[in-house]
Image (cartoon, rainbow, N blue to C red; front, side, top):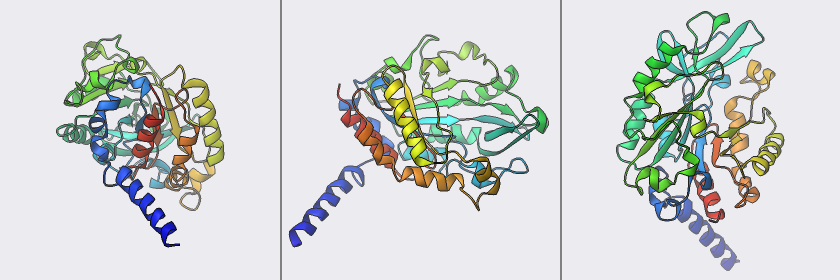
Length: 332
């Protein structure tokens, strides 16, 4: 019995050393550049967060509550320190301010949702992180929405509003230079971070409602979505087994050819969103999904694996640990 207990303690110690105190999640790319640096982004797995800016509740519509609008609990800076390298940022204009948002159109007559972290604080926190961490950060800008035009008339940003946002984002340090034809999945981590000696930040721009004119900025830190182009199709279910089966099936089909984002997220039903916290909150659903995240490892192979693992409520380095384990399983 003593030998068994000793062995178990030894195994626990090895795990802790591998992914506990020994894992510096804030520097995981730099620390592993020797074996990850030569890989292209298509050959890498990185942690991501879904609706990354919705980590605080900054007001919203009449039916909006933290339980049905917040997808995260940690600031952008903390997410980066936990190892997240893909940020899903959804800018909105609310009360004249550039914030992040989480909104849904209800039928054809109303929008419901809330606001999160401000865009200026996000830029400040990215700059704070890259000041001392030579990591690659990819930021997706999508779902841009002006909420100051009347609830029934919320609309996508127009050119002047995108320009206002871009002027704010111009303050971001370590923006990557490329061209309008740059395709990042073909580029190596070492190419982008100069072999781990510098940070590298890129924004990709997408709008569900209208085209976005990046203008003279294209190739200078700002790129259209097709420069990264992740395949991203969530399961739209609040049942873990349904989400799991759906995402694994999509991974096996699409990850061979596409830059593949695996959406390890559960979605509230309309009843959940209306009655939470008496029914499932987004946080409760995330806790349910995230506790099974290591199950993903059994499904990954060198020919079927996620390039981005996107989670709600990243509160520990678990997703970074899993991403590193995926990278170890994938052989090149």
